[in-house]
Length: 186
Image (cartoon, rainbow, N blue to C red; front, side, top):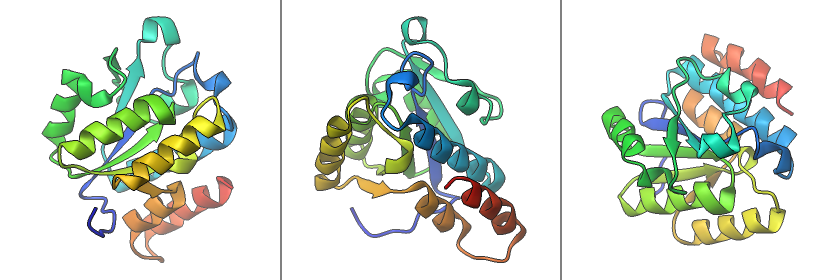
């Protein structure tokens, strides 16, 4: 992966499967949802598009209210493939945005997030996983997946790291608005 700063004009935030029947079992779910909320707020404030997915919602339920409510015009892509990129509607929506940086967050890191990262990177996208807004039921699964993904060139980032790269500078109205949320997300 070539060195690059994340850009609000080149990024798309992909929200993977924060679903009602999955989230209660995710290790560290409260912290994960807090960081997801920060990123969704920043994306809305800065005009970064958001794509959301739901894995087999009939069985796993819909997206949890705190995530669903933070996405204006919420319209998730329903999928049965573990990789979001295996779902034609997701690939269509992503291509229509024309953005090269894909910022992934969600559950589970070692299944849907990881497979999506690998497939999108193989297709030439710059892919980053927000490690503190992603998780699995077992920490070892998430940690092992992240080591593997990093070893093949997938970028690992934190929610704050993404936010401040999108912002680029302090003192702006956007910075003032978002920095309040950054402080609340600790």
